[in-house]
Amino acid sequence: MTYRVPGRTDHVVVVGAGLAGLSTALHLLGAGRQVTVLERADHPGGRAGRLDLRSPHGTYHADPGPTVLTMPELLDEAFAAVGEKRDERLDLVRLDPAYRARFADGSTIHVRTDAHAMAEEVRTTCGPAAAAGYERMRAWLTRLYEVEIDRFIGANHDSPLGLVGPDLARLAALGGFARLGPRVARMLPDERLQRIFSFQSLYAGVPPHRALGAYGVIAYMDTIAGVYFPRGGMRRVAQSLADAAVAAGAMIHYGRAATGLERRGGRVTAVRHTGAEGGERLPCDAVVLTPDLPVVHDLIGRAPRRPVPLRWSPSAVVLHAGLRTPRPELAHHTISFGAAWRRTFREIIDDGRLMSDPSLLVTRPTATDPALAPAGSELLYVLAPCPNLAHGGIDWARVGPAYRDELLAVLADRGMELRADLDVTSLVTPADWAAAGHAAGTPFSAAHTLAQTGPFRPRNLVRGLENAVLAGCGTTPGVGIPPVLISGRLAAQRITGAAHRRYTRARRVPTGG
Image: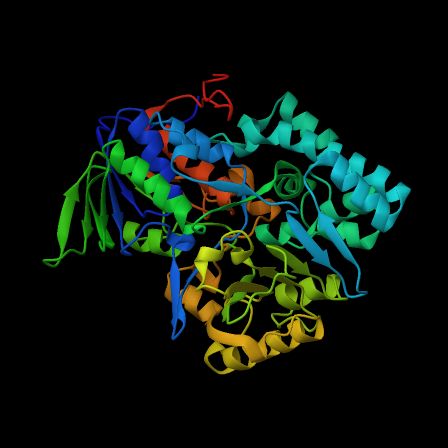
């Protein structure tokens, strides 16, 4: 039996109205708890919040954080907890292709999530042997997901011993504890396909040749389950969750930053926070803390002891660009791969240097929702992985503007000339992530190394505080929108003791205990 917060838990304060906090709130509300959410910004979303870029031609509505949305059934679960339906609050568009992958040799592969369409794409671009390998890869990723999603990703763990059982044996037999890169290479001899089905491990902070095979589940989410985009931008995800929470009785206080916890006898009794009249306090029976780990440790007053310090994921530079003219030739998501591969990971993870031959994610949200930019304009998001501040000694105040120009030059060399068409730009660097409270200047938190995975990841419980629980990407199960939404449910379950009920998207009724 997993740990449940003892004693009274009628009123729960959730710190942070990001996706983790909002997921927590909805699952708590569904279990009959009174919920108050404190959010330091003037809007919901956290990393998935909002960034408005204003120019003489109008306003561009950019997404400052994640741009890839997968596993919308997890949103269904959160809405269903309070009796709502996701499609009545959020208009999601399934992207086809999910990505367009462009390579240094000039070739292009459209990544489609439909099995037959992708098999034909692979057969046409890489040959029949590669198509057969893709079908084996798809079957393997699907089996990984089926074994992992409930038992390993979607459950609270109080001890590594709790994982021992038939599912652990199945995961081991599938190669979940072997290395991802070599496993993918055995099934897909074409290096381009190897990249498409393994680059996602960088989201978990580990290069493919070092990542556990279990992290192939991220590739399942991207390349099989499907990639979606909400009309109105990614900010609509958080806003729709917040609206549902308020409709179900939650109080959300914006512009209120938590500053500390009051405690008595090992329990948190109130959360101190900023307010219109200075410092205020909010009594509670339990608290859920969702900011990044350094902020959580400041609130608690200490960091937990670990035999080895946490290792942080690589960071990212993000260039937001408003363009004056349409770019219909660009897909919604384009992955522009450089010729280098292993060297790229070595540079940003081991050497603490910028990529000499960068691989980039270029997102054009206006391909799906033109209303995100002024009429006749285009909005782009360019993400370049880079070292975090703990591992790279880069002076971003000095290097940032030059790196912006370098990224624009790289894009131009790859057939995406933007410089003469720029209306407005905004550059986000690791220094900006650090200023927002993210450890080591990375929005991807703790890396998913073997020693920081599953029950070895920072727990969602706080030693010495029996009614404090964590949620968010710094705790279990980890980084990315699907894990963060799950972390909210897991935090709620620590308080309510409720069993997980999976909801189907079609019927929206419980399908299991």
